[in-house]
Length: 96
Ligand SMILES: CC(C)(COP(=O)(O)OP(=O)(O)OC[C@H]1O[C@@H](n2cnc3c(N)ncnc32)[C@H](O)[C@@H]1OP(=O)(O)O)[C@@H](O)C(=O)NCCC(=O)NCCS
Image (cartoon, rainbow, N blue to C red; front, side):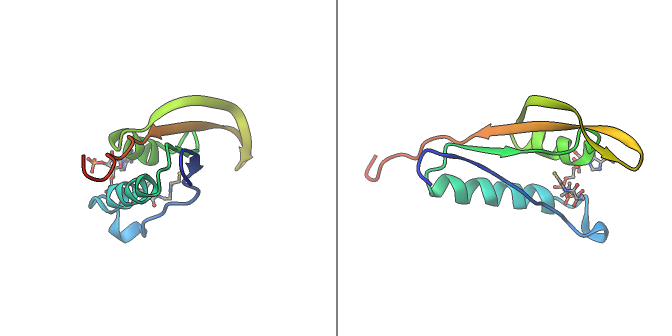
């Protein structure tokens, strides 16, 4: 996928294993794999109320690029969706 932006659609760590850095390792592995395939950017859409996920993505270099107000109606309440992105640096050409 040279030069394209792609979404990270699903990420989950079993509740019993959270808070040990597994989520961060998975995000970094996805970014490294996408970068190796010359992707330019990764996007994510965590719910606005999903603070654990947002904190993780911020720590991994993502920034919030947009908010979709009241995008969903969950458990009887309107919930914002957030849009986050991380630019991937271009790889050095072989021999550089
Ligand atoms: C989001 C998720 C993947 C993180 O996985 P993880 O293995 O716990 O992630 P890490 O251990 O690498 O990092 C955890 C970080 O989350 C944040 N965090 C955890 N619990 C939090 C809370 N209650 N409030 C705010 N931030 C929190 C912290 O920044 C924490 O970093 P710290 O250890 O320095 O405090 C995991 O919580 C999960 O599977 N959640 C349910 C599914 C989900 O929401 N997926 C994302 C959809 S976009």
